[in-house]
Image (cartoon, rainbow, N blue to C red):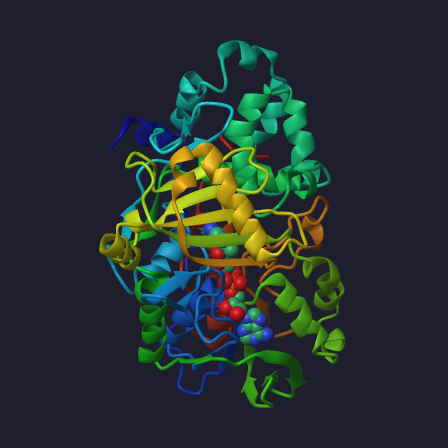
Length: 510
Ligand SMILES: Cc1cc2nc3c(=O)[nH]c(=O)nc-3n(C[C@H](O)[C@H](O)[C@H](O)COP(=O)(O)OP(=O)(O)OC[C@H]3O[C@@H](n4cnc5c(N)ncnc54)[C@H](O)[C@@H]3O)c2cc1C
């Protein structure tokens, strides 16, 4: 085991069980109640996998024609054939213990996930900063970063407000929110008095990745993410990605898994409201069909959850707290943009498969799909081109997708000049606002998995948890927690839930 992991383990940096699971029968009794899961993204399918495996009669209602939500993929007709196109490239970090546990159902060795080499941060102003080859575990990863980063010299560290930096090392699931949730991430970063370069290269790229502007994001949430990704896990900042499109690698096999265990997956089913019944709930879809169940899991994105609650007028009587929280929770973070370009030539061979970008007005990351995924690789080999995906994680509202795509392409050319001469053969661009906002002061009102209505649960990447988690992993974890509540009510064995070290390295226990 690498030295950093040994040191990390001695300090308790390892997977921690937040729910040991078990406690019931491997399969629920035959008369156990039915469950409806609304939403077929990571959260909904994670819940459905666990429930179906225990013999629960579960039906997933997904509005779109394909599963996956923000991790989805669908076929797009290009001039020279059909290609699966993702909603956007995703980094599968190694401390995503719960999401990986779900994915192991379809591939026990997770062979479809391949390490993505390197994790460079590009800047037009400063030399590239490399995050990919840091030691895996804290504190050696942080010490190495501080020792070798050209963005942060010893004299900069002396000029920093070290007292202000302490919260980054003392994450605590209650105290961090109690002391910092009303502050913005921007104010916290200001208080560190970091040199501009260190702030841009080490911190801003990180905070942008959460689909929130620093000025509108809770400082407590940023500290929690810093802990989850850098200082609380022994797996490192390196990550993996599927070598095939997400429909083939993830969604088709997961749907088959649910169905093989007796679950049902219905796509193109838009839930419009739910009504209380004597023995549970009725979920109504746009075509007027009613789905009855004792338990319902709402695993949709925040604006969709607010719309669903609004479409369920009777809910105010049964879940007044949930209803009261919706106006704030349903307002998503800023729009994000994804542009996939099929180009007539390639960028330099030494360009990384995935790069973060610092301080460009729009562009936040670049992914070279033709060096990552099978279908794109084949397309590029046929015509000698490249497939390049550009992301903006928190962009200006009201700008059309095509314009954002063009802005990102021009910004890429300032970083990688060779890309300027490549001609665009195809472009698929989209802009959407579905990511949860983590606004200052929002923590106490953030809904959790359990609602105040019996048999009604929430799951998704905006739902509160008592342990550090984020993004895809938060979706999977909350989906499993929702399933566990139902399994415990119906006599089935619950699923283990894991997380990273529960507190920061310097956090006091009490
Ligand atoms: C461009 C981009 C890049 C990202 N990169 C990363 C990354 O690198 N790493 C990472 O961890 N995360 C990343 N994320 C975040 C990640 O995609 C999300 O955290 C995760 O997919 C959310 O899953 P979910 O199931 O909670 O929600 P969603 O994926 O939003 O799923 C909700 C589902 O509910 C369905 N639905 C909505 N309303 C209804 C209704 N009324 N009836 C029926 N169905 C409905 C939707 O169609 C959708 O399928 C990225 C996101 C984007 C957009």
